[in-house]
Length: 190
Image (tube, rainbow, N blue to C red):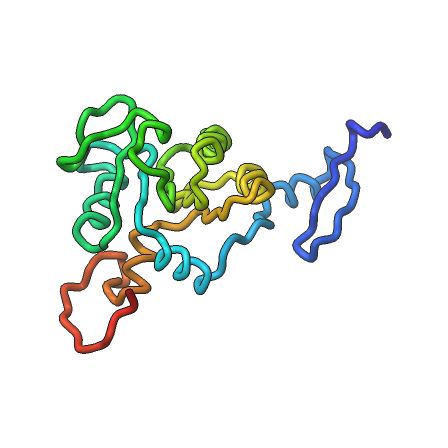
């Protein structure tokens, strides 16, 4: 068996092992998610510290989730929200920027609405502008890109919706992820 016939697999306990590449176990382990990312407490700290968010892959189409998230961030937070889409002039009444380099400031969080295979190039763009956090939206997963970003000093949140997380930490989350409209005397976290 040659080195190309084997794969090195990192297990969840941090140990690595060599397996035949064609083995059922190697295939199963490749499909397992071993990267974890920041805890809930760490995600709350990220959201508290941030003052600006750039949404990469923002859409002017009201049916797209990036539009919904942008609307929420504009209306329910104090963040400066920037929309990044090279094919749009304006989104939600704000100027749309063609890329991260065109923004008037380095965003504290880059929220990404792009397919998983695009995440490595987005991480390269984030590194180039110097943003500290990449937040990859719910349903989007690229474990290799997350590990790469972390190895370059980025904080990476992946497969989590920034709107849902913000609402969860600030008392406005319904079971389905929508604002409940309930007025409460409970003090919210800002």
